Structure formats: C-alpha cells, structure tokens
Amino acid sequence: MKKKMLSLALAAALLAGATVPAMAAGSAGTANNAVLPATENSFVASPAGGQDARSDDEEIEIVTDNVVTGGYIRQRGTAEPRPLEQIDYPVIKITTLAMSAPSNDKIDAANPGATGDQKAGMMTESGLTYGKNDTVNETADRYYAAESTGDFVDNYSLSFFDNLVTVVEGNLKNYSAVQIADISANSLALGTGKDVRLTFSAPGVKTGSRVMVARIRNGSMEFIPSTAGSGTISFDVHPSSLGTFVLLVRGEQ
Image 1 (cartoon, rainbow, N blue to C red):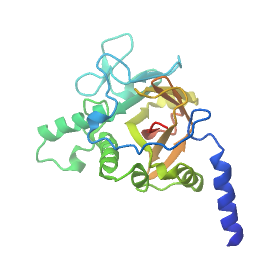
Image 2 (cartoon, rainbow, N blue to C red):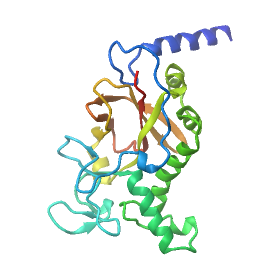
Image 3 (tube, one colour):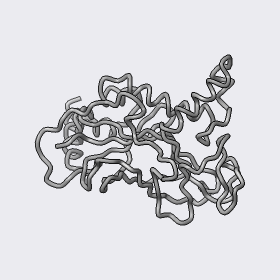
C-alpha cells in the first residue's frame, strides 16, 4: 500500500511538469474562479455563413454550416443535398450546441406526442439525428447542473492518467467550457486512416492560454492534447475516435 501511495504521489509530481494542458510560459499567480455559462448562448455560436472550426487538411472536408433544410449536406460542387454518409468524399461534420439544441426543439414542436425513442432516428436541421443531437444537449445539461467544472467531470469515468490531470489542475475549478460539440465522420473519412488537426474559434483565448479538450464516448471522458492560439483552440482527431467534445479554458492568471 505504501508503495502504491508513493507511486501515485510520484506520478502526480511528474504530471505537474508535463504539458497536457497548454499554458503560457512562466505563468504564475492565482487564477480567478471561472463561472459556468448560464445558457447555451454563453458558448461560441456557429455563425451563419462562416466556420467556427476549420482544418488545413485538403483530403477531408470539414463541415459546420453548409447544412440545408432537413439536415442534409450540400454535395461539394453541386446544390444536391445528401446525408453525411452519402457524400462521396471524406467529410468530418461538426455540430455545436448552438446547432443541436434548436434543431431538437423544432422536432419536439412538430411531434408533441412522440417519445424520445420515436424521435431518436429523425433527421434534424443540424445534419444529425435527434438522438445524436441529444447526446450534445445532455452533455450541456450536465454542465449547467454542475456546481463546478470538476463536478461536471465527475459524471464520467476517467483513466488513472486523466484523474491525475484533474488533480494537478486543481480539480478544474478555474476552468470553464467555451464549446460543446459533436464531431462525426463518414466512412470515407474513416478510410483515410489519418489524424486531422481541427482549429476551433475561441474568442478571448490567447497564444499560450491554458486550455484543455475533453472527449466523451460511452460514458467515459479523456483529455487529448491541445494548443491555444490567438482566439483559437486546436487539437488532432482521428475519424475512428470521435464523439462529444468539450473545450475548456482556464480563467485569467
């Protein structure tokens, strides 16, 4: 038992010097406690006619806003709307809370007597089914209901390493979420077998800001490497390892 406790203490000490969350060099002092957003309007919206996420990858197209009525994506070079899986080139689809919540609200209004199971497979204007939107929306509900970001994280299973990350980061009490989004891919994107770097808009973030990105799948959460730029958060994803992503930013130092 004594050896196990020593190992845990040593691991925590080593992790404290690691660069899991991006941070400014030489930052010091006490961080302000971050306040949880009160509504989805506190998160970064998906601007009409603009991208809230991008990638420099030329093989895989990143889709956020070119979704037409009924949830279908405009085929590149044509006006033909198709479901994600029927697009004939590799696509990664990003659906933010700003898209998923109102899309499901419309389905609810149009189907007042339907159960959640009956609505789960319905295509929505976000480009995802009602059920996939609901995964994003439920993640946001858990976040709003939590008293702190640390309490939100406690809703999920974490690996030994990711638990250490939260300990080193003070149980994330100084972090707040700036974005919650589903990231999905079609089978052609999966077939590329390659990682893709995504860059999300994150107003207020500066180069060297302390940021973290959490990926949620099947009730488990893991933190993935990320970097902060001027108004951006970047991280790599693989089409086979997608899910719901939460982008976290630490309060000013």
